[in-house]
Image 1 (cartoon, helix red, strand yellow):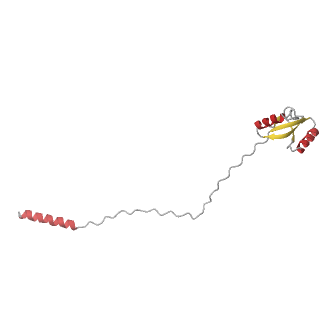
Image 2 (image 1 turned 120 degrees about the horizontal axis):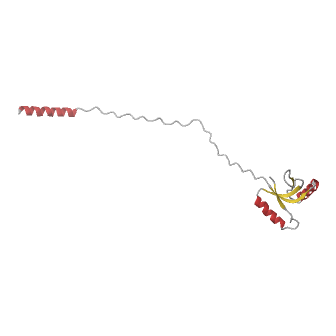
Length: 138
């Protein structure tokens, strides 16, 4: 029994001795922190939005013709008469196609075909303007 007592005491001493030993503290891994971003020291140019380009107006290609003359002098005389009445008149002469030998005198111009035809129809209802027609200038 002595042997058991000695063995039990030895185990008890060993157990207590082991319990008193402190393990060294575990080192936690060091977390690397990314450096804070530096503020920009260079001013960046901020581009302002560019304004939309204005669409170019359609060229006037439809003309109400008040008269057509074989003589340039007569056409210019009539054009001056219309300008005196407040119209934006001009003499038009074609250099190609049919009727190249006539000088046409316009008194209104349009970029839109439907608008030109509508105005022609209105003008034809007025006395003295029954023969107004539309010239398409290419």
